[in-house]
Length: 135
Ligand SMILES: [Zn+2]
Ligand SMILES: [Zn+2]
Image 1 (cartoon, rainbow, N blue to C red):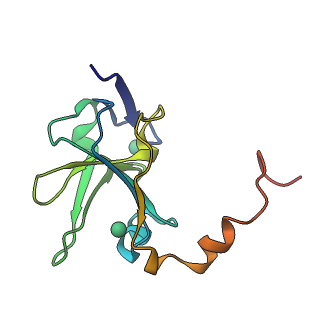
Image 2: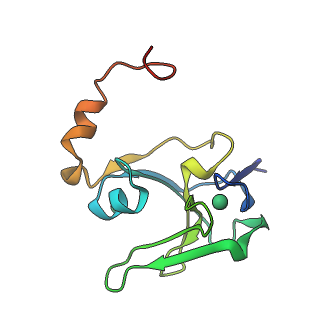
């Protein structure tokens, strides 16, 4: 039996639980993931399509599908936070790792589409690490 994890959006309108049972975990540096997340890369966990129980707010989510490419995303209609979504094929449920409240048992398998990784991210990984804003 895997343990249960909880997650949700930043404003708290959308919450869910799922089983800590993931097949793959990728950091994706492709341009589309960069735009969709507004960040250096997507952090996507892959699980079975039916591994999710929406506790509240499922009808406060919006799904976006790229018109020609195989990209989709689901986000909170109120705060914009990324949330779990079914791939267009319906084969996987993609869970943005940052939407979880706890640490998943699975560690990242690979960083993918690194040819599209930004220079600011490569250099930023070498920047000083601080616990909060610089004093
Ligand atoms: Zn929200
Ligand atoms: Zn990507």
